[in-house]
Amino acid sequence: MSTFQTGTGAAIGAPLKAPTGVAATVGAEGSITVSWAAVAGATSYTVYRGTTDDPTAASVLASGVTATSLVDSTAAQEAAAYYWVVAVHPTGSSAKSGLATGWRAADAPGALTMDATTGEVGYIEVTWTASSGALFYEIFRDGALVATIDAGDPRVFTDEVPDIAPHTDYDYEVFAVNYTARTSGGTDTGSANDPVPVAPSGLAATDGTHEVKVVVTWTTVDYADHYDVYRDTVKIGESSDGSYDDIVASGATHSYQVKAVGESGTSAFSNSDTGYAAALSAPTGISATDNTDMDKVTVTWSAVARADSYNVYRNGVLLASDVTALTYDDTTGTVNVGYAYNVKAVVTGVETSAYGAGDDGMRLQISAPTGVSATDTDLEQIDVSWSAATGAASYEVWRDGTQLATGLTSLSYTDSSVTVGVTYSYQVKAVRSASNISNLSTADNGLRPQLAAPTGVSATTTQVGQVTVSWNAQSAATGGFEVYRNASILASVSAGVTSYVDSSGSDCVTSTYTVIAKRTGNNSAASSGANGRPVPSGEFCAGGGLSTSGGESGYDQSFTVCGGATLDWYLNANSIKDELILDIDGSTIVDTGCVSGEHGGSYGPLSSGTHTLRVRVLAHCDAGQGGTTGWSIAITCS
Image 1 (tube, one colour):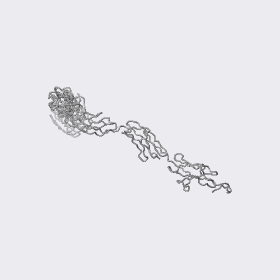
Image 2: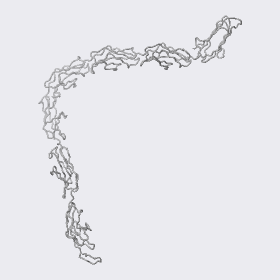
Image 3: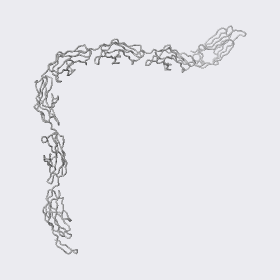
Image 4: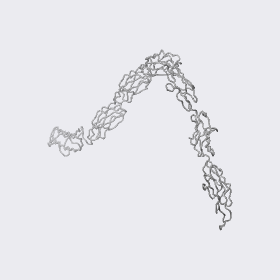
C-alpha cells in the first residue's frame, strides 16, 4: 500500500484506489475500446491485457496513459481479450482493477473486382479477384443469390443455359463475406450465345422412290440455323428444315448424313442412311457432221422426257454441260481429226441417264495456199506472194520451217530481214480461225542478191606524188563507194562519184587499189585490183628525156628515179663522126668514141634515189667535116 508523501517525505494522504467501472467494448472494425473511471490523485494509468482471466498472467498493454480510455487494435481477432487497469502516481500505484472482457471481431473483407463474360458459347463465366479476410463469396444474378463459393475454391462461377437465356443481358454482383461484414466487388453485365447444337437423329434416305433424286429427312434440333447435308462424306448442300432433295444419277447407292450448324458451332454427324434414285432414259438419234464444215462439228439428238438439259461428251470427256437445246456446235476440235460424240440427259444439273448411241464427226481443214513465189532480184528484200485460199481470214508466212509473219490479210509479204546472198525457202499457211489452220504450202526459194562490185577500176599516175583511182559509174550504189589501198580503207565517196585521187602514198611504192560499191545493208564485194605508184618530183619516165642535135654540147641534169629505172641513149652521127660521153654521178657509164651513123644502148638498172647526169657530145671528130648530129636520152621507170 502506498501513501502520498510531501516534499520532505512525510505521508500526507491515503493510498491510491484501484480504478473502477472498467469496461471493454467493441469499437470500430478490428478494435476494442477499454474505459474506466478516473481515480483521485492518479497522474496516469497502466493497462494490462491477458488471453485468460488470470491477472497474474497479464502483460502491460500500455503505460503512461493519461486519458481514461484506450483503443486496442492489436488483440487477436475472433478471440476473447482480458483487461485490468492500474492507477499510477509518482509515489506509487494502485492495485489492479476488476476484470473487463472484450471480443475483437475480424476486419471487414478486403476489396475485390469481378468480371462477367459476354458472347461465350452457352454460358456466362463470372470471375473475381481474391479478397483478404473473406470466408466465402456470394454471387448474385439480377439481385438474386445464385451461388456461394468457399474462399479456398477457384474464384469462378459458370452460369449455363438453360438456367439463363441466350442473347440476354444479366447483371452480376460478387460479395466477399466474413462474420464481420460483406464487401461488394461491384457489378458487371454478361450474356451468352447459343449453345452448340446436338447432332440430329432419325435421318432416313429414300431408295428408288423418286426419279433422279433421293429425298433425305431428319429430326430438327434446338439452336440450329441450318443443316449441312453430306453425300458419301462430301458436303453437297444445306437445308433450313429437316429435309433435302438430292438430284443424283441412277444406278449408284449413296450414304447420307447431316450436321446441325448454329451460331456457336457445328454438331457431330447424325446417323447415316443409304439411298438411290431412279433413272431417265438415254438420249437417242445422236448425229455428228463429218468433214463438211471448216468451223465446227454439229451434234444433234432427240429430246428425253423430264430432262431439263444435256451434257455432251467427246471421246468420253465432258465437252459441254447444261445444254438446253437439242444441238451443240463443237468449235474446239482439231481439223481432220475424227471424234466420237455422245450425250447424257440431265435433271437440275445432275446427269441421270446412261450414254445414248453415239456418232463420229470431223471438222474440215482449210486448204493450203497455192502459187507461192519468192523473188531473187531485189537488192533490199525478198517479196513473197501467193494465191488466195477459199475461206481464209488471214495468212502465215514461214521461212525455212519457222513462222515469220502471222495475221496477214493481203496476198503478199515483204521480208526485209534477210541476209544478202543467202537463199531462203518460203511457205504459206491459210488461217480460218485459231483452231483451223492449213498445212504448209509448196515452197519456193528466194534470194536477196549482193550489190555488184565496181568494174573498170584503174590506177594511174597523173602528176607527181599522186595516183588517180577511177571506176565505171554504178546507179545501184546509192550509198557511194569505198576506196581501198592494199585492202585497207582509204576513203569513202558519195554516190555518183567515179574517181579518187590518192595523195598519201609513198613515192616509188606500188600499191593495189580496189573499190567497194555501197548500198544500205547491201555492200558489194571488192572490185578487181589495179596497181599504181606515185612518183617523186623530177623523175624521168617513158616518153620524156633529153635530146639535142648538132655541134658539141654539154648537159647537166639532176633527177630522181625509183628502183629499177634504166637509161636509154641514142646517137645519130650523120655523115660525120661524133663522140657521146655520159657520166652518172661523176662516173662515165657510156663513151662511144668517135663513131658515125646511128648508135644506141641502155644502162641500168639505176638505184633508187637522186642522180646527176652529165651529157657531152663531141662533134666533128674529123676536123673540117660538116654534117649534123642528133642524140637523145630517156629514163624508163619500171
